[in-house]
Every structure is written in structure tokens, then in C-alpha cells.
Length: 333
Image 1 (tube, rainbow, N blue to C red):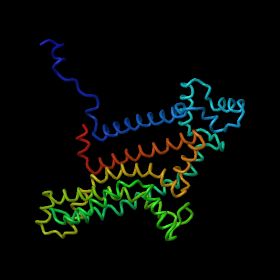
Image 2 (cartoon, rainbow, N blue to C red):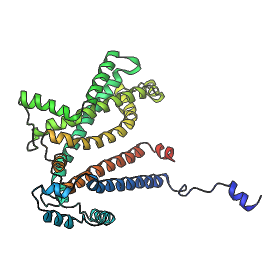
Image 3 (tube, rainbow, N blue to C red):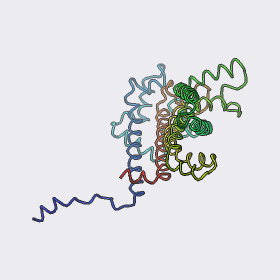
Image 4 (cartoon, rainbow, N blue to C red):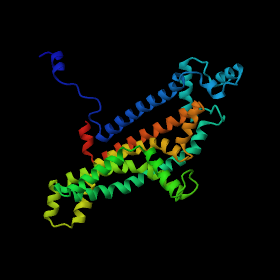
């Protein structure tokens, strides 16, 4: 066999295969995150160029003189070649410059800094409420309906969770405003000045994800309770509470963790509609008013913030799953 034939038979070693699984995992995640961020930034940049009409004319209004519109376009660099505008946009992002509002002449980064805490508070409280409701509800439903028991309980739980999980959060918000704000006059329905003002927006944001997550936890719990290691735990006559909470629950929550990360991302995006229902002073209400006013630099900046938030959440969920189940590192190889 010649040297050339030997080289053809022996497979070439794959680059990076000798590296530690965690190193390969981190490189893959960082690569996906970088590509996703580039797509997001490029889409946000192209948005202002793909929308029909002149955004500067739309922002300044029909009474603005052509000289004023042209001067504004020149100051924003919109008369430069597209590649030059893209390079300037990327350079600004790397230095923390998201542009300047066409309406208020305020830096977009300042607008985001003012509104972001309210959105984060709403999303975080909604997520915590969804977890606090879904975990005990899903575990209890799984225990009550294991091995074919509790057919009526299973039917009622599944039907209710499916219905609640499919209702859009803004429709839930409108219903809550009508019942608790208009008819009963129990809770405020606008702003975030008091603790009571958080109740209805947080419930609106959490009720759908809680229903979906509880259904998944019940399914995982039923499956886990049929596993061999659960039979072994029962054979050792361990207390039921220990079997359910120490042995079954951690395994059932592994799959739920993946879904909860996706739900958190959807909840962050869902704040846009909920904030507008409750006049919440966050990014969601700001992006809608900016779209109506054609204030595209602010729209671009807020879209980037939402996109970056969702991407970071998904990356953190992947890392958490790898920590909980290191076998996933091997399966990905």
C-alpha cells in the first residue's frame, strides 16, 4: 500500500476532538450566540431601510421643510452609502451608542436605561409567580394521576391548563382589568407606583406560562414515578414525601427547566402587550409609542435589547441543563 493510499484509508483526526467536552460545549454556544447576535443586529439595522417611506419625514411631520428634513438626514448619515452606514452602526453599538431619538433628541441608551428596570421587574415577578404556581400544581397533579388513577382529575387538569395556556396574555389582562379594576374596583389598572399595581400585570403575564409548565411537570412526574429507581426507593420503605421530593422531583424538573427558559424568553417578549394594557412605564409601552411616532432609532435599540435578552436567557438555560445533566455534553458530540 502506498503512502497516498494509506492517507486515504486512515481518517484524519477531527480538530478539537481532544479538547475537554466543556470547552467544546462553550465554543459551540459562543459561536451560536455570536451568529445570532450578528443576525439580530443586521436585521435591526436594515429595518429602517426596508420600511416604506422616509423615516425622517415621518418623525418630523408633514410640516417640516425639505431643508430641515435634508439636514436631519445628513446629520444621521442616511445619505451615506449603505455599507458606510452599517459600519458606523456597528461601531456605535460597540461603544454603547444606540443612536438618538428623532423626537426627543435623547440618547436611545438613556431611554432604555430609564425604562428597562420596570420591564425586568415585571418579567421577573411574572416568571417567579409562574414557577411558584406550576411546580406544586404539576407535582400534585402527577402524584394524583399516576398509574391511571384520578381520570377525572387528569381530564379536568389537562383541559384547564390547555385553555389557560392558549389564551393570549393581553386578553387575560383585559379580563382582569374589567373584573378587578372596573367592576370590583379592588386594584389599580395603570402604572407601577404602588405594590398593588403589580398584581394584575404580573398575573396576566404568568397565568399562561404557569399552565403550560404545570402540564409538562405533571407528564414528567407521571413518567418518573414509573421508573425503576422509584420502585427501589419504595422497596426501601422511604417516606412518600422523600420519594416524591428528593427522588422524583429533580428528575421531573430537568425537562421542565428547558421549557421554563423558553417560557421566560416568551414572557420577556410578552411584556410588550401587557405593558400597553396596563400603561406600564417599561420598554414595551415605549416601543409601541416609538413605532407610532416613527422614532426608529429608539425602536431599533429596544428591539436589540429584547433580542439580546432572549438570546442570553436561552444560552444560560443550555448551560444550566449541561450542569444538571452532563450526559448532554456527550450526546452533543
